[in-house]
Every structure is written in structure tokens, then in C-alpha cells.
Image (cartoon, rainbow, N blue to C red; front, side, top):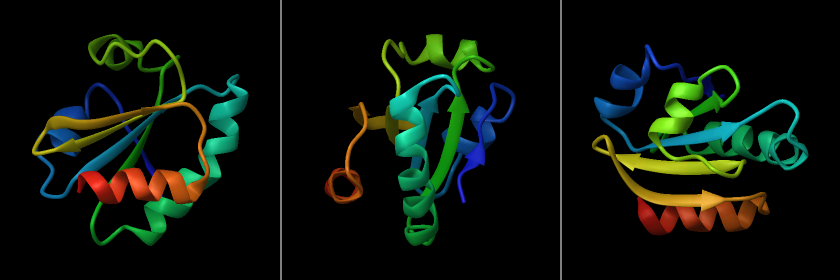
Amino acid sequence: MAKELTVASFDTDVAQASKPVLVDFWASWCGPCRALGPIVEEVATEMADRLDVYKCNVDEQGELAQRFSIMSIPTLILFKNGEIVHTMVGNMPKAALVSEIEANL
């Protein structure tokens, strides 16, 4: 299950994480975000042993959205050792998302 990411928890949850971290930047009013949400949840469950997954509501956590220059949502960013290793923008099928993650783990 994807956990909620906040400005306050970012350093602990992402920057100091022992595993790679996928962050889903989304908003409740965004149709493609709502479509991608269940896929992100499935990936969070299925890849839990290799990856931590967080959701970041850009309306509630505007500072993080600005920090990572989020211009379009949904945007998913894969972090390793606190550094961005891959960014994906837009809705996508589960197979494509898993493939992108696997290629960058």
C-alpha cells in the first residue's frame, strides 16, 4: 500500500530510505491521476520487498511539487539513495509502469 508523503516526512521517507522509492505526485481533481492510482497501489503491494511507494498530493504538499518542478500530473519519480533516477509523466498501463521501474532499479 502506498503511503502518504509530506514535506515533513520527505527526508526520512525518501532521502534516507534503504530501498528505492517511487513517489506518485497527484491531485484528487486529476482524472489521469485517479486512473493511475489503483495501478500504483498494485505496484506498491507487489513490489514491496524491493521498493517503497509514496503518494504526494500536490495541492496539499505544494512545496514538494515545487521542489521537484512538477508541471504535469500524474508524475512519478523513482529515487535511489535520495537521488532522482527516473521520471515518468502521465497515465500508463501497469505493464509499462512496472517495465520502467524494473529498468531503473
